[in-house]
Image (cartoon, rainbow, N blue to C red; front, side, top):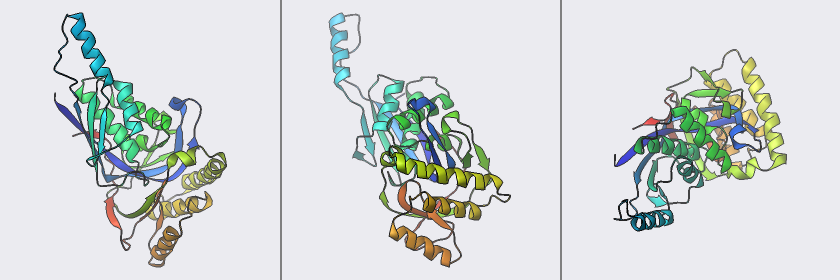
Length: 297
């Protein structure tokens, strides 16, 4: 097989609670979020180090190994070469082979759409197919999750992207236990302005405590909610964004107020200086809530 492709959906996180320990395999998050119709398509192919072939000749074999060790994995995002630590980690956890990774997406990187997680997960799926590693989908998703935690690019996106849908996590995401709500094929509108570094949030204890207190209160509200419809869930999401102290951007606050004045509902996308709403607003783009998880192309 010369190449392999996989898709993973973007994930919009509405509410989250940080559950991080010293062990990345026992770290994750609680929260609420949903996957959308757009995401990433990852194409992977092997990098051939040289024309030297493996033979019984020890000299040739040593040369082959030496050349192969000096070659690095190459990763592109929308045709631009980038240093993508989370994706690199996934590759290194699965193989010693050197590969070229092409990631394509209509969504912006670093603006709260979970593209680090999506890229890691789709890379794991495509690599598994390309190299015939025979790993299960859940095993691959867990490897991608650990890689994301280790690189501090996210804590819970991959679990949502593995299952797909509008999901609530009442238990830490590393357990891969979710509650799926019957909300799908609904239009969502978004607009992003700039990224927020997830790493800066995760490692700050003061910010973390405020987020966790607000997040747990929001999840308890959702648990007691009889009618868990899109409107009510966006309202609780907005409350979380305010009480957690994450909603600071004046432009985003102004947009949310304007949407609400037109009988719409809106909140901040976690974690990015971005807005999502159930009603079209100026400059916004359309997405659709989908329950399709990551898959091979």
